[in-house]
Image (cartoon, rainbow, N blue to C red; front, side, top):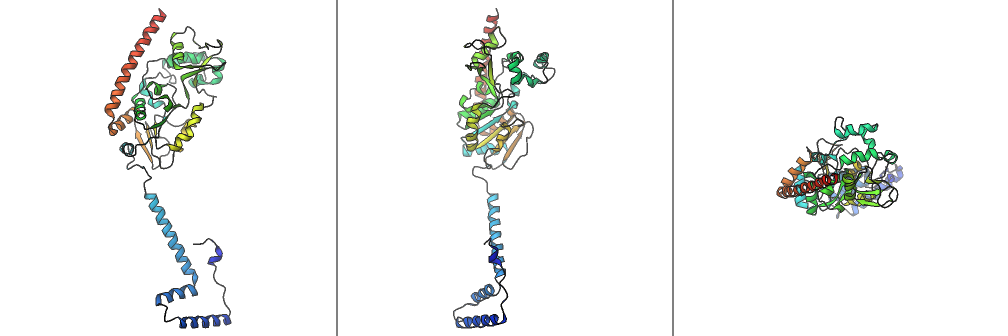
Length: 373
């Protein structure tokens, strides 16, 4: 089929003398070849000679129908490594059958709900009432970099209660660790600053804290860095509320949390593009996907890659490749773990790790008591 209009133009009318010459030539030619031309061939020759338009149209229709049929067949095909059902059962089968090695988790506050992290946003709660004395326009203002530079006291007042509570990772956190230990995880992108992903025992190189965390801290004056233990010990044992640098003695040490007005961590930009290019399963848990640029990452995986959302409510507009489990992150991972046959492993991991953390918390409380005495 050609797109050149000239190929489909109707031949110009011939003069009478031309017609007579053409008719005679055609008759002579037909007579001389009658013994070797079949009726069918003669009919095709006559059709194409006397009126080429119907033949050209038929070829166009045939070619178009063939292309349409092929497109429909391609559309019906499942992508390589696709889901047989858009359910948790389908996701479990996908993991077992294709053994994905580049699974990406995208998680939010919903995976930490059952950990009992103190709530500072809801009126009537202790932390919320405590920060009201600072006359903030809203609770979130406590994470404003402008406020921190002007007066870091409100943040450290919150941090002392927010980060030092005896919270333990949830089943959702330990499921991600289990997936990592089995060689399935490419990266975990968390919007949380509670460091429970680290506390669960998941390798640090697998974690990207999109909004930062207090896993590390930095002096705002000399840029000396500190680990999580240093910051935690300051909050627990120091007589001063605001943390100051041991090196320069005057700079305020700020946890590497992304405050409002700051850029996302370098580690986020270092990994995000490559990670999502090779992602072979995206699991989203406990997030409403309203904060960008993290929310936009769900569209960065290839079109045929399955996406699982475990959340209390749907988010955005789903497409054919998406699976939605309505419920808490803990309930979702427990069911998925059961379908994968990993339930005994997950239960044993949680029991062992929680006992270990309880022991550590008890020792810290004893140290705090001794320090106060």
